[in-house]
Length: 189
Image 1 (cartoon, one colour):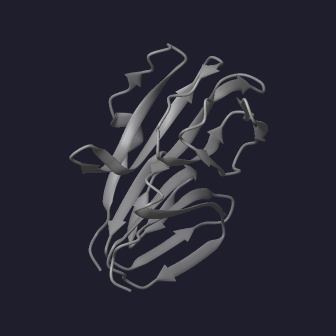
Image 2 (image 1 turned 90 degrees about the vertical axis):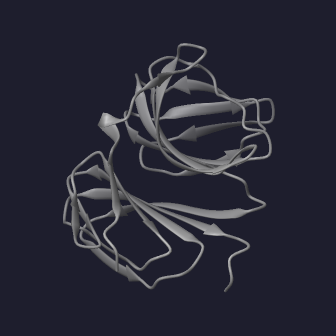
């Protein structure tokens, strides 16, 4: 089992949104010649407004700080509370309304024709082990308090990436982490 790649998300350069409503810090992505197959990022949303469009992609958004937000499109309105992953199409024309002040969210954007994504919030105390599989990327993000990924301590706000390897993670009592699994649909079973 290799050591995971650790990313301190607070050290990632913040990129302002075109509409001025927030900033994004890109954690990692799988690049292709015409974009990416998946991308992990954290956004600080300080104002209500339009979301960026990602045609052909799927999104899973999880509010990790703040009181939540409401996503509106011409066909739906959905409340997204704190720590509740919400999936939606990147094709949708989305406008966000802040429920009660600024929020921070963790975004998983992926091509559903190539990637299957799973996102869940893990409340401690929890310990889990998953065997190695080719074509799978795991990300563990320490939301509240520290966590442990493959023997490496993750301080709050850090993300561990594990590619094509086994995963062992521990979330201590009263701590919280975000678990992300990205599976390449064309990888051998």
